[in-house]
Figure 1 (tube, rainbow, N blue to C red):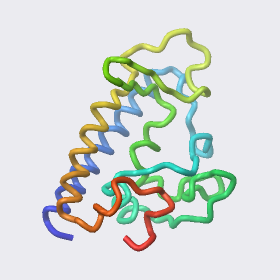
Figure 2 (figure 1 turned 90 degrees about the vertical axis):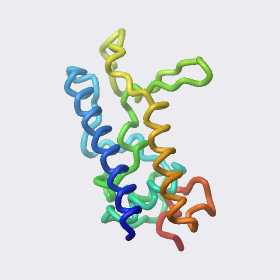
Figure 3 (figure 1 turned 60 degrees about the vertical axis):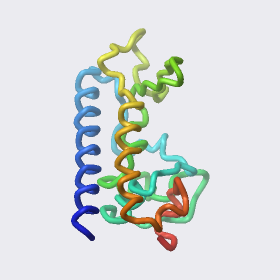
Length: 166
């Protein structure tokens, strides 16, 4: 791996670490409102697509290999656990948390129906601004594909494609 590629991967890992820290902070502040836990795989569905940088991150840092898709479940789900947990992409790190999306001034809050079931309102300090995160990820991905033009074949890759010929 070139020094430039290593720097981009380091920036990506730093972004992942900051997201993990934010999610941990929200979990603590929620007072039990976030019910995500080891073994809960409600959100682990097939068909998730990733930027090439995220696919590369899984390929480089994940210990799991895709399994045959079963009942619409993620190909990295093995016995109810994520086989690439330490290298999982941003969508998997944030799913279930209160995610704020801004579509041309139309704001939408998305979260798992299993979370925050006993509260009427969620403090806005617990919202994750996905526009900010997705912009940072898109920038890093652009830098990545400049260095690895072979990844330009597809704008996004499915989880199933990560280990197929790239």
